[in-house]
Image (cartoon, rainbow, N blue to C red; front, side, top):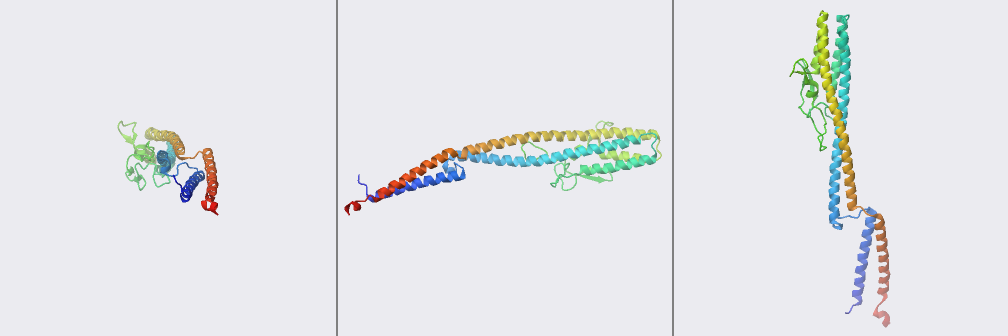
Length: 308
């Protein structure tokens, strides 16, 4: 087989270009820290990395939704705690009004105090979450969910709960009607009590002058009974908010572990073994240097050099 000088030169140049390309790719891998820079580098590993990246995106979205749900639930739990404290103060005023030595003027003062606490309670029921939603707004409302009318407080929002996109139905709001207006009536099986109606009735009766002590005592007994029932209902709603917070904490821990696993899978699929990569780069660099030296020697080997 006859090999011409031009053919030898061309073969040497092609070999040098391949070695230079391989050295450049090894350098690029070291610079980026990635073993798989393009899907063509390793299709199977690229697919695994893509699946892990998609899982990371879903998990991070769920974590953001979970954070919003946690914030709303914490605010709801705090609001129900405030409601419980307000009702306890109402109870103290109502209990003091049943004393036989209390005058109509004293009961009027107690009634005004209860009315003020009732208004504070109404503000708690309409409390927002700071993000444009209402804590007790059910499935959503552009305006406050509770409206104070001449016939009493009514609920104008959509019934139900608004849930976050966390995959496990964590709450963003509470059904305000169930929490505030639908307490089972202990004196009327099957009936329901509104916490605001209970307070309004107590205020009206305490403001009525000239009532005998027996009637006042009956007002206090009925008021305390209904007040305790509504307080227990709100306390139950607060307990459910606490349980929701526990579920949120558990879900947050699971999502954090899923995120760690997805990051590890992505790293295993596309990240570079730096020790092995440095060794490979050095080997390729040595091979390229040797190829350059041999090419420089071969380039000088020409028949014309010997004929001169």
